[in-house]
Length: 77
Image 1 (spheres, rainbow, N blue to C red):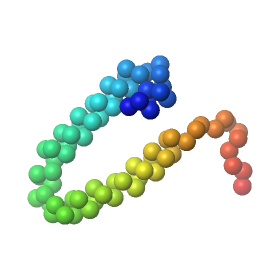
Image 2: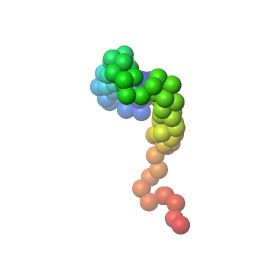
Image 3: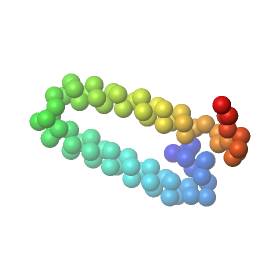
């Protein structure tokens, strides 16, 4: 949350509210969605599939944490 507020200080309150809301949605899905999902997929497969979420999230975090380049200074070639 501190990183998001530091990156966008003019929208700090909105950023904090959005992150808390996303956390609450994730908690709700994790708490109440796992039971019905076990009827379709076994629990060990759910854990394996959830571990794979780390890869796209790691890429997204890396991509979003890079400093922004000025327009026209990208790689050519």
